[in-house]
Structure formats: structure tokens, C-alpha cells
Image (cartoon, rainbow, N blue to C red; front, side):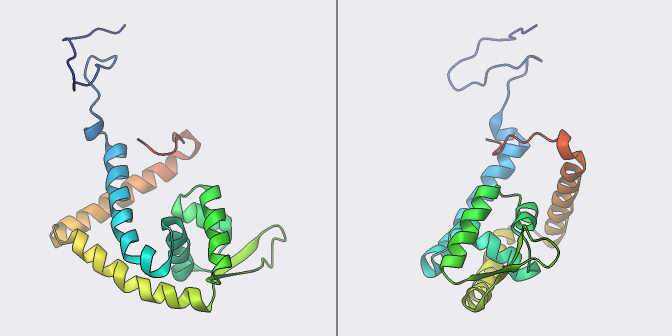
Length: 174
């Protein structure tokens, strides 16, 4: 049964069944999403205008530049991006001549994707920008904090991977 402990006023969160208000700004998935989106937009400013790339296009290039050749399904898995976004990014990168597609030797239904000459050049030009942005963003953290953050993110990611089908697949957390 739902009981309110106090009257809600403008700006207050509505109480949950447990009687405590839900505070979106304290909800971990929301906080991580907002922070990740801000980081992505900050970095996108560094490469979008200069190289004409969208965030999904850069993510596909980054995965292929560090682990290619891969199938589109493997890119979806590594980036946790929606299949449609990956497909559109792949098509755009192919049209720009940044990506090459070749038949998969073991699976005729899929293709292996890899960076092509111009894509390799752009990837190599963006990597120093990525490293500089990461250094700027993490400058507010000491070495122990950076190591702890990395460890905590890895633990959360491993836990989510272990949940498999039990994990909620509701898309963006807010």
C-alpha cells in the first residue's frame, strides 16, 4: 500500500511505495548516463567539425581501429550501441571511404568490417585528441581515484554482463 509521509510541494519528488522520494539526480544509471553524454558531446566537438563524424561513427571507428576487423554484431556487443545506430554509422563510414567491408570467411551471412586508408588516417589523427580530452577530464582525480574509478566501472560492467537476460533492457536510463 502506498502511504505518503508528507505532502509533496513543487520541486519535491513523489514518494515511492516505500515512502521515500525517488531522487533522479542520485540514481546511479541516470548519473552515469548524463556524465557519459556530457563527455561524448565534449569530445564530439573536437572531431565532429574537423572530420565530419557523428558520435556513433567515431565509436565504430574507435572499435575497428583498436580491434578490427570485426562484424557489425561484434561492434554492437563492444559498444553497447543499438544495431540501427551501428548500421547507420557503418553505412556513413563506407560512403566516406573510411571503412571497407569484406566477406566473412566462416559466415556468409555477415561481413568483416575494417578501417580503410582514409579511415586509418582519421583514426590516427583523432586518438591524440581523445587522449588529451581524457587527461583533461580526469585531471580532477588523483592517480588512486582514477584507478578506483576504472576498477569500479569494470566491476559494474562485469556484473551487468553476468545478469544477461535478467538485466533490464529499457534503453537510456533517463
